[in-house]
Image 1: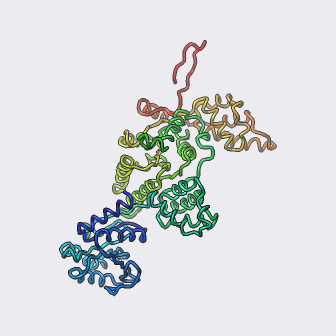
Image 2: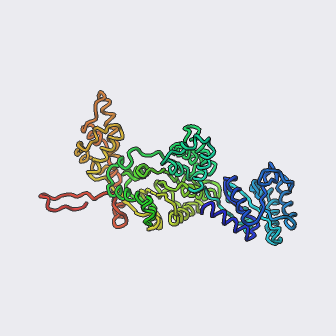
Image 3: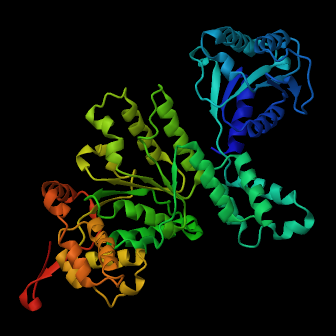
Length: 523
């Protein structure tokens, strides 16, 4: 729900004579503006209170009612309720005074107000709006108040903030502050920030460059999101999908899905892609693919670490997860990477003694993945399918479940070339060098084992006078590796047996031609 819709909902609560409204938000000024607007539309005056200034009007001037003490202020509101004008009282700092045994007298004062306010005459209607950074309402007040989670600014609000920042500039700067074609990018770069954070990002860009630059805004956005410690922002993978060797079917599917984000696709009625679950052998490119998608699609990559969100305090783990998901929804178009999801949700399927935290996290994630309406693309990776809850893999949560197997001969050659490019040896990675002997010598190697041959060969070549890497160096490095296909053969076979009929192959199956080229079979 957008902020404008929340404002309309707030006005409806006031007209319905809801006595106490608890708004969960850290954007005090932005919420107060919405409350003032909602109160005016419902025929109420608005007064503000905090422990420093006491009671003030919306113009900031002191009003001689109550005082800074919360008990005195609540008592004054109760005394005035039967003989005063219609008024909404915005309580900025009341939340901490409602906590613990010392807060019980304040809780009782609020309960008394909540019981009496709905019965006062219409002309003297009063309402209490409590702005808090915590969604935890005291149990004694849960039956008396409506809880409103205030959303982060949507794209329209961010656009208004950008326009206001430009309008405040001198006239000679306004024309060049947002060059043609950059306004939409600057708005997209700030989506997911609070109103004050977005305004600060735009101001920093103007101070540094005298214009709005989406890259500067995005960099500042990264700092803000990292500060929350709920999500991890990853740098783009150089080369995008070209940096991932093999996985041709998966890559083709991802390229086709990118077009679904275009305006033409929205006009056509095409739904935004939801995501993909990559299951398979460790070290075969699942996590690398997740990083490459964000580069190929030119969107942010956010890593959601479900384990890191857990807290020793009751209820805080669930709150952390909800806040992380709300930030993802607000960011809009992005790639959300959940690595080794089976480990993060193991307690939900294996009976971990964590007080039900893992089960709650699973339920929250499943509901969010099913019902979310944003443009985030979730890519989750898993190595152990036996630990995955069945409900995670049904249609509607992910668009497709993919199985990533050991690389084929052709893919091993591609991985060698991609690794050479990544280590500054692009001239050796040309299609003319097929590296066939290396691909043939690495049967059963994982993608990471093949890629690691290049740095090993570089060490050998550097020690031998700093010469160029040769095929012999790579073959020598391969001879020292015991591949995962040998050390974990049983696990790989179990993965393949599970994938048969349950997941789509990420790679075109390798074919082996019989003598004379008459027949080929899929392995």
